[in-house]
Length: 201
Ligand SMILES: Nc1nc2c(c(=O)[nH]1)N[C@H]1C(S)=C(S)[C@@H](COP(=O)(O)O)O[C@H]1N2
Ligand SMILES: [Mo]
Image: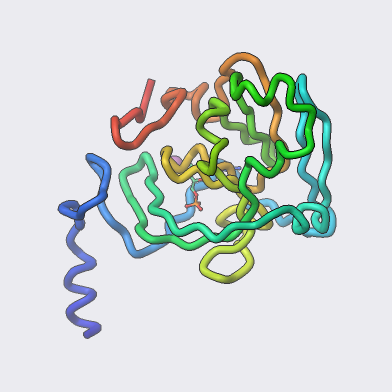
């Protein structure tokens, strides 16, 4: 068994149904961070929701009291590894919008700029984070999310390349234009759809 699986691990599995073009399957969970891993005590963690339509702040307990979902999804990194069937638990981004002044938000127009501890940012059209497409997750495979993978809370946007899934996330800023985030201003694509290989520029 061990010999068989190590033999297969050496090869890059590319001919897998449901795999975006140019990707291979990994069983590992690589860590890709632009800087050091911040150690954030959940008791001190907050998440802010700012912009034209709203200004709200959740602390850890307030966040945990929001509606939760279990999510099982494939994730795709622009460096060409994909990990299939990953299981997460967290709060759908939609839930952050419930109870806000919906006047401009209900139009589903505009953009989100997500902010993280340490200064990382990433930009997304609201249409890519609402209607059950994105979550703020704090559990991975039934355990609290490890710090190196973005714990206590990261964004999960599985239908886009994983650089959009900001780790150590602490804020959503509503903006009316698409402002490039950390990687987007360094040559990565503004949108990042793995199915059409929106990798760079
Ligand atoms: N705050 C923050 N979020 C981040 C990053 C980062 O450097 N800082 N790296 C991004 C990139 S490029 C990728 S591929 C994924 C990697 O997530 P992982 O380390 O859990 O595999 O996180 C994304 N989110
Ligand atoms: Mo990445």
